[in-house]
Amino acid sequence: MALSLFRKKEAAPQSDPRAVEAFLKGYSIEVMPRTAEKVEDFRDLLPKGTRVYIAHIDGTPIEDMVATAKRIAGEGFPVMPHIPARIIKDRATLADWLARYKGEADVKQALLLGGGVATPHGDFDNSMQLIETGLFDGFERLHVAGHPEGNKDIDPDGSDRNVLQALRWKQAFSERTDARMAMATQFCFEAGPVIAWVNRLTAEGIKLPVHIGVAGPAKLQTLIKFAIACGVGPSLKVLQKRALDVTKLLLPYEPTEFVAELAAHKAANPDFGIEAVHFFPLGGIKTNATWAIDNGGASTTPAAKS
Image: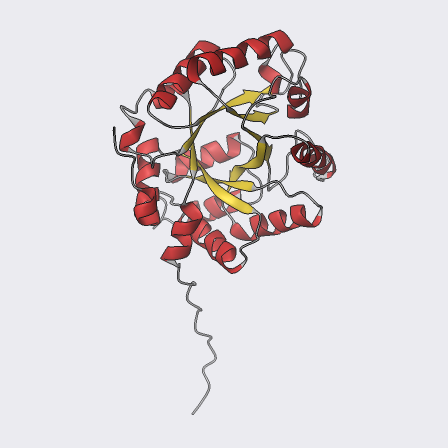
């Protein structure tokens, strides 16, 4: 019998629902004050205990940030506001913000990051300077930013030299503080480079748990717009390739394949450094929460109202 000259295309590996469910368990999600206003009650959407990050975009009044934190905490969810170094004027301003968060919303967690502006508004340029103020002493959790595809603001030459130096400093700090620390990353679209990046951090002695950024379901055009604005790197080509396929152009993007690949790797390598998923609900909080429920089973059902 003659051999075929054509190879049969290999089928994509089947997703393991149990691995995906385990991977999604304990996920966090990000909101802004204006998007939170559109949610009547977060208990209708999110599992009990879900950590809710509150993104602080330049120009958002601190009053709106604190009010959002108070409202979501009042519904029973731990809140983690962003503290962007470059939009804070000085130490007194930072102290005032933290006093408001703690006093009005009982905030005990924070994500410390450089911030999305090129020129600092005041005395701070990076998260290490925020930590060095000592004002976060007593916080239960401090997360810092991670960039699997690099950060040109820190390393304009495309290397990761300065990023690694900063992460080593944060790793050392984590070893001498009582606060639990982790690294919340920018969203990406390719699992392979993420796996390589996490493994490299481990090899470099950086053991901060990784909370991997995942873009929630959204229209493709919306996702590409956000990805470019947020500086997503090489994995943007996944979206661009999809956009060239007219059969997929009008379909919403879902992170199913990305999550399944990472979940499978985590299941096969329990010590792998990704600890949790952090969602960016670019297509809407309800849409993202519904996708998580559909893919995570009973462990991600919404919290019951008391």
